[in-house]
Image (cartoon, rainbow, N blue to C red; front, side, top):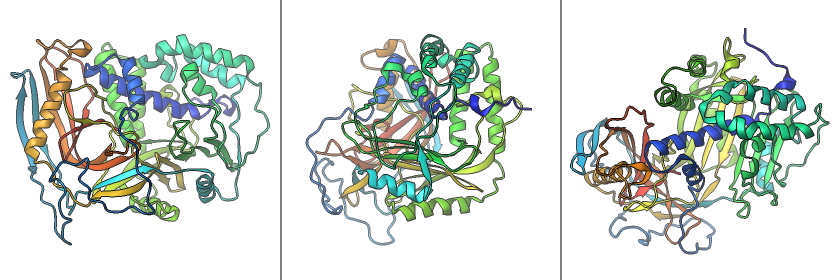
Length: 547
């Protein structure tokens, strides 16, 4: 049977969020290291500053509604074309199957492609300008009333001495994530002392609930956040921009709401989420499997009990996803209804993924050893992802990507991340909802554009891969005279993504982009590398940094 823990020993579920965040950053670090860009700790900072690196001129006044401007400023001359007639389909010059070998630098950089290119049935490839959407107390009350009408909300209760002691014991025993190489050193040198510091002031038992009004207030750092970041936590605590509450439902595990207002001083964008329990979807599990593969090849070549248990857990999660009690169509209908009820426009369903839901997660994050014999109570679910739509071209948000700066190429770094909504649906209803980076349409820049010929796009891909495979400045320890690298193209497809907006540094343009997933291998090295996602502006071929 599965090992069980008393409810009093269960760490706060904010730790789950922090685990996923640290894992995400860890994955980016591995990606950056493998691409020989910079030292991993420098790249953490780069990833966090992803959306803050462009300086242009002031933005325009927001009109009452988004006009069609068809302006040429910021777009290459001749790329704006007339809107297609009704029923007319845009012809794409990319081959249905792309098989080719391209060489650069006298064969020291090779790009190999042997992939099908999906065909899109679209009439136009427009360009839209978006801005951050306001999210204030009125918007917060609208969402809480929709999901939890008539319910009370109370402050998250502090962790007790018993809960903190349990975390310290896990660190000492290298249990779960604390046994993972990524966290092993930090947990001993930084996390344990911080927890011991908190332990001195922690209560012996949970205090009485403190009920709260639905309004933004100053953020309060949780124990798990302090453990992860310590004094390096850059969150601003002087602005009333945070709402963090528990919904009083009387259930064993009650929903947790976390929301941020749009607040330029605090550096936060419109965000709202609530969750009951914990969800793992197939995309996230695939990423975890990639990390296991990397760890086995590069970190634990002699084997690892931790990885054995982790991989077994991932396999059983995948098995638990099968045969959900709700149909995919019913799940999508529930998700679509939420967007319609809330009046959310511009976003459409991008994908529907299988998932597994743990209504009562026994541990914080992915503490695989505690799932050694039994997954515990779980239900198959569907995870719905909604994103912006560009004339029938869905927006693409990469699981991984590397920030590349100072390259001798045309490049763009959007000032904020893509808007997305995720909804997890089970037979019991919606168990998780998150709305990230709220945005709204500012104007239509062009109703239709002429795309760069695919022959030029693939040349730009080879050029970009040459720059990251053999950096011009020899950064990351790369020997410009000896390194031989091969990039295998795993996929190629036309999608949409954020780019910079001309003359509006606080806005973004949603543009058509070519998305390539490539895998690198360096001659004489057995290191396993994560696939690299490359975005190229489909209009001018410029490199778009991932957002």
